[in-house]
Length: 302
Length: 286
Image 1 (spheres, helix red, strand yellow):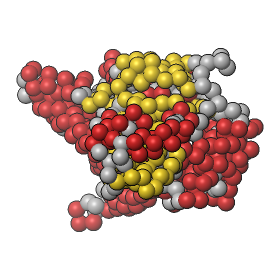
Image 2 (spheres, helix red, strand yellow):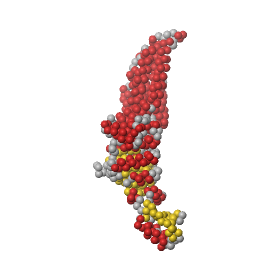
Image 3 (cartoon, chains in turn green, yellow):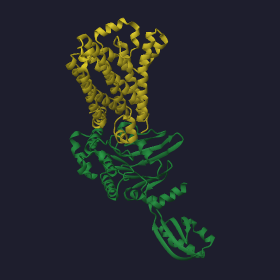
Image 4 (cartoon, one colour):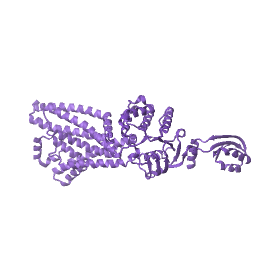
């Protein structure tokens, strides 16, 4: 069983009447990976998570979580989940919410006190265990939800927009918690539209838009290539056409931007510009950020 | 503890910790105090301050107690609807269901747990308050209805029937909508019972069948008639029986207990509607 990937989906699709929420998702997430599922609002990220947890039923396709088909309760046995809509029983205290989830997760009762104390400490609520959840701020509720997701040594943790209500300190804490989970070999599935967050913690990324995965791979694979900005004048139209082979070219205010160029090819680009009669005033190179790549992909998809 | 019992315990905890239950208990105590005071005044209510005789006191007390019992069954049915109608839909709408149902628990266990929890809370409310009210009436006018246990059982059964309906509606409808639908149906069931009685009184089979049909479709009024029967003293039953069919139209009178097949029907009805609720919620997207 341990050789099974954490998540495997095949053509997993979900339609609500005429709306396509997820169009044929096929992916394999190996165990131990921190996987970023990226996309704009309404791309189908939350739908994918709900399908994986059996909260919604796929229109077609199939999937396994920890080697067990989705919908089967055994697939949820070793899974922690922080929903995007995080709400916990307001009439319970934080400790009672955690105890409830310990019980539902089938954790040995003798381990509850330690599990609960660990979860509260990890998410920074150690002092608030006896406080009713109804009095919590949104940020505290999200921290509690994160604590709930960490109970009982899960093998897979699904975090749906885990920092949406958190301040910068909270966001930092979530990154630390995610890294600690990775160090313990736990697979983390992180849904987010916050690119910087994903870029800092994820090993693998899939970018989803309008229910489809439009790019996926490791961060290195996705962000391969540089972005070069060149200030050039007197460039002929032919010259501009000649540099298209180096990457995606855009022009704005006397600057040419070439994205996706291989680093060793930058001098060749400059030479090509000069050969075409261009007068080069400045050359700047930069790694493409995930945000640039993301926007470029979404732009290309529209 | 099995997941079903965990959810049942959580549901009881929710109902007891929310204000609704406390308000209900407080108001019930106030009403019980007023009712008891009224009963204590009964023997002095004769013409010109004459003390009523024992037979008169029993006759009036028994009928008054039926009206109090109706108020009580009404409150219990309403509370059951208020507890049942938002229970599933509220959890789905607020998002609390997401984290719970992502655990290894089936939808059937979740729905059953909710149902058990609300039934337990209804009993926790109904048993002590009914017992206390009957005891207080006994203390002030020395009157105990003939079948107090059956009365409580029928009133609780009526609440369980309407709760099960409200819970089933709550698998698909928002709390407010489901609650209104359940209460309207409860009212229709009550009127349907009266219509059936009128049909019996005027020997009109068609109208009688309307009453029978409503009692089969929603057995709340049938259970209420059982509760009434449990409160009628033998002397009154005898008198009213002599009145023949004409008494049948009175919604606060029942000459006989519901027959055993009808009780079985009611139990089956609860099982089927609960099964439908599980089926419906299992197909609901959270």
